[in-house]
Amino acid sequence: MSAVIIQVKTSLPEHVHSQSEVTAALVPRLAPTDGTRAVLERLHSNSKIEQRHFVLPISEYTDIDSFTRANTLFAQHALSLVEDCTRRALDETGLNADEVDHLFFTTVTGVGAPALDVLLAARMGFRSDLKRIPSFGLGCAGGAAGIARVADYLLGNPKAVALVVSVELCSLTIQWEDRSMANYVGTGIFGDGAAAVVMVGGQHPKAMNGISVKGSRSTLYSDTESLIGWKVGGSGLSLMLEAGVPEMIIENFAAEVDVLLGQQGLSRNDIDVWIAHPGGPKILEAFASSLDLADSDLSASWDVMARAGNMSSAAVLHVLSDLSEQPSATIGLLFAVGPGVSLELVLLEWT
Image 1 (cartoon, rainbow, N blue to C red):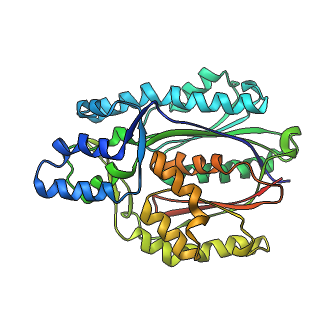
Image 2 (cartoon, one colour; image 1 turned 120 degrees about the vertical axis):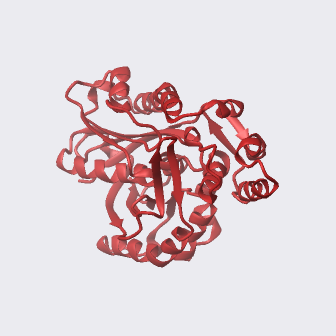
């Protein structure tokens, strides 16, 4: 029997800033010349993002002068944010913390050993024999990959309870001395957020109602390592983002979708709900172009992006949360692209 998603909850930081407020706050230090200011303002205004949530007031980001400072802030703020959505997700299902058997934790915006999932386990009161997978490096694909990997685990443990938990504080990765196009784009689209997904195996009593994981597909494209990711250096995590990513999606994405659907005896016409990672306007446009989708097919992803930006691994889980109430027999496809370049697809059916 398939693994089943029985709850999705999200959290956003309290500080909300309009796109124009963010741009105005960044210009004096990040784009001090007329030329760089024009580039930054153009990129931000074309992002189709209305607002974003940050863990700090926008005025305090200029005080982040080192990776040490940024990572310390991550440790201070990420735990409470991810605890909030995890606790609410479990409460909504009626499950207790000591019933959780497996935890997949993903982030790409802060590092630590032990990883943050250990601190979350202590806060939540998870059992000492909890099976943990702390993930770093999947980037924007982390939320989708987490659902797929946990579904695999639950096939072999059909009575188990598992969590997929994501927290991303993208705002803390700002690089003040980086005048690259990638950094300017990143400051215009990325936001902070967290999400928690509760999943159970097919033989668990709560598996009767929810979103069944019918299959998944992972693809890693060779010779694309430099297209998306981090450059890790003395100042911390600096964004790598090349212009070729949308073109790669347009050329390859539809074929990957068709392979997964074909394995289940389905075609694109059978998909009722498209759950796309809101990675930015060009990414969403590339997904739609590859699959020949109408604008309305990805409206939930555009909505999340407009009100919260690209929250890396948590973003597609926010879209899933918005679309979680569907009639029985609805078929959906959840997908995200991340460093590698890697693609993660998850086929879903509402029960």
